[in-house]
Amino acid sequence: MEFRVVLLLNGQYKKTLHICKTIETVYKNYHRIKEENKVYFPRKFINSYGLKPAKYEICITKVTEEGDTFRLLRDDIGKLYTEPPLGDWTIITSQPYDIEETFWLYGLENETDRVDIREILKRLMINAHSKRIVKQVIVAHNKLIIYNEEQFDMVVCKNILDAQRLHHTLAKIAHKQKIKTLLFMGTATKATITRLYDLIHDETGWEYSKIRRTTTGH
Image 1 (cartoon, rainbow, N blue to C red):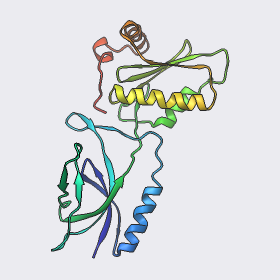
Image 2 (cartoon, rainbow, N blue to C red):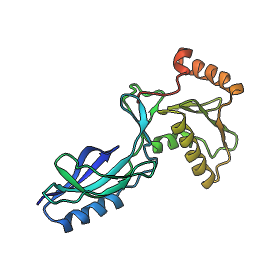
Image 3 (cartoon, one colour):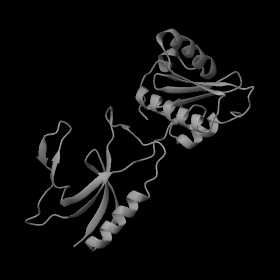
Image 4 (tube, rainbow, N blue to C red):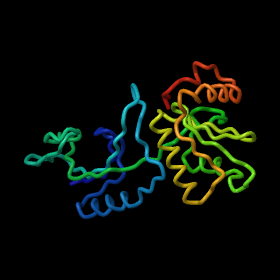
């Protein structure tokens, strides 16, 4: 018998994380993989033929045999259903798993170059302990803007929900570290968004049609 720990994305096979021959060993490695899953900013959306929520799981699977019992699960509205096999494999157990989200940071040469929240924090913390330098952090659609007279950083997120989540996460970190030179302004209003369009245009040279986009394919 062969057992595997596999990663699923929205119920579909993504990759195999471990293979072994005994149920004891597969459970041991399943729990180890889960315990080692330390993520700072979990991915919540993917862009695959359109933007959609992302649900990652790890599960233990075995080759399907005659007489196997498939799990009874509940869907998003609470209705019971029988879980189908994963190809030729039966799922024994599963649990949520996190994948670190990455972003495109304006200024990188290629939009396929991605950074995680730790790099955003580095940019945010530049001169953050200097009392004379105050930075504003604000959400403009799917973009998080960090700026003052000396600095301009723009993080392009998949959508406004991710940008807001990033804003709130950074705000919590700054509050915990008692940094008072970072002003977290929330989401731009109709009254302030035009000024941000102009700021982005002046700093990047982008066309306004590009600036006004609300989602990204990345």
